[in-house]
Length: 82
Image (cartoon, rainbow, N blue to C red; front, side, top):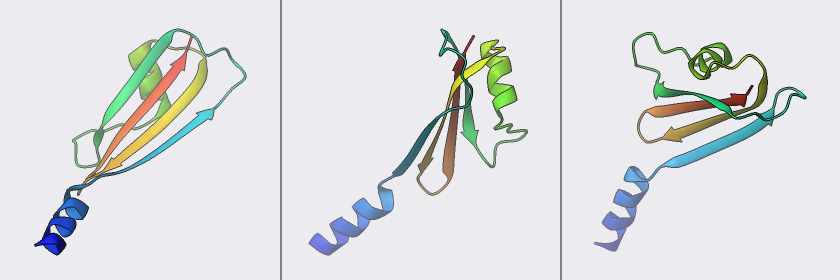
């Protein structure tokens, strides 16, 4: 019974990988653009350019990529700048 419970927690648990990178020497800024989705989503564009367009950002200060893995990886790209 305990082994089955541990197996279920392992199968249903998630793994989160997060990476933050300063991509330029520009200030962090107050605008934020986000792209969320998974690889099976039609026309899924996981790029800095699409995140910048969503947040109306012209100069990137920080970009953060986060991946949550259940059975399918879910991506979240956040770009902050002015």
